[in-house]
Image 1: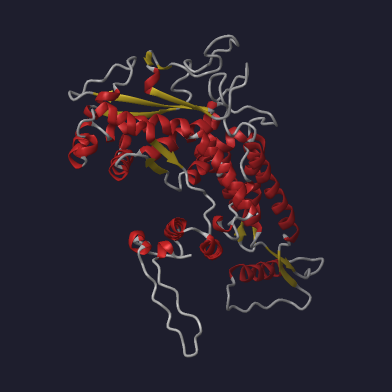
Image 2: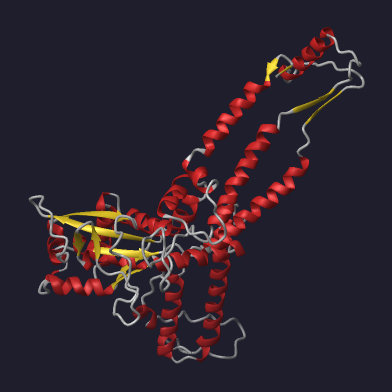
Length: 498
């Protein structure tokens, strides 16, 4: 059929070809052609397809991990040369497994959320390139002499070995133990297994091949399919945006070739007209765009509900899926920011086990015997007669890694708190100084100095007073004016003044 000299059948055919090509894609074929209903369980292949192709697949799994790792952990080793130890640790952490410790944690956490379970495996090669036996424990005291490699394993890689024991009286009841890859069994010290959510007794997880955790997509599968339908609706609306409706006057009951050709000519002119052109139509004719006004509210309502349903099913804040910008950011402590911060705190707790697993390895790599020799040379009085093993375990036991608060306090709030604190210190000093004995006066001044030095916001430098000199300080004798009736008292040092 030809309208205005244009064959619309070819246009329809091209559009249908594009849509058919889309429906043959892995994602649409699996989610739209499959009979997905509320409560459907995703397979391993479907979880992989969603993660690779679904617009929300990556955001639901990797997104929270990225936010959780957006801040560095604060490392501390009390009673040790902290600066040197932390520097060596961070250097080894950054080069761990060639991609860094943070990337390793990110990868295994993401896969555990995609499939329900994932494992990080560490292998070792000696100086000659020989592979250290997988069934033997990792030689922690020799790690600095070996080449380590790390592999992130999904549920298919470890299928059959992480089914989990369902005997309620067994010591390993629903606990991941030995991991095997093919016929090779790995020692417990060589692997760290993470599960998304806790396993449920006799509840099989299709995507994880065992009675283990479940994919983050499992409860959200049905609304995620609906999300694809909303994208198809968006595409259809976009195709109709520039459709023009030309209401022309009928030429009469007898439509001859000349009238038909003239109408087609007018439609062609309208079709190819652009900004700056002038088009002439009849007085009773009308030209307008296709009315899509009523699709806006329905489309936005449906899309928002779908995203809210997905967020609810995945147990994550909806604002993280909606891509809504926080009006005041994390620093202002808005309700949305607080909800996200609590959710990220929970994610960080779930990451603790994999961090502890890697921390133990990095400590051995960073604080090796050669490094300890430099510490002994730098601090001979402290570590000169201390063995390497004794010092290492002292540092390891004192090692602490804490996450900073995601809700950072704004400068305006810090200024208010510092000012109020400083006023409180001054008021306390003014009220206590007249009634304290000489020794406690000096102690009060020392306490005031500590309070001032702890405030990094109002004061840049530190206040350092000589309390011994202050205790012997003799204030100048005030000069009495004419007509004074009382002799000035004998000057006394600060520690004896009242």
